[in-house]
Image (tube, rainbow, N blue to C red):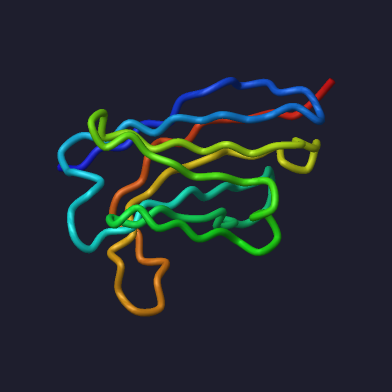
Length: 122
């Protein structure tokens, strides 16, 4: 029912800024009580949670990334955004957006986008 689709540049140079978009259909990003997360998976590694924006608009980030990460949204467009500054080669990963059920403990995702490959390289 709910569909998410990530888009953005596939190649980013070191020190530059990454901007990704997640378009959502079949459900509103403002509906109680869902959270909308960005998650990434470097090649050969596990999933890493980046942060979320809640139905209310509040945001929260992984402590290791929060200094250079910003999640925002456009309610009218039902669209999520991820901005990450000062990209490094270690930021190379497949980036996903996903819906979290918003239950205690978190990290319960019922819908995922297909993911978009981001390669950081000069």
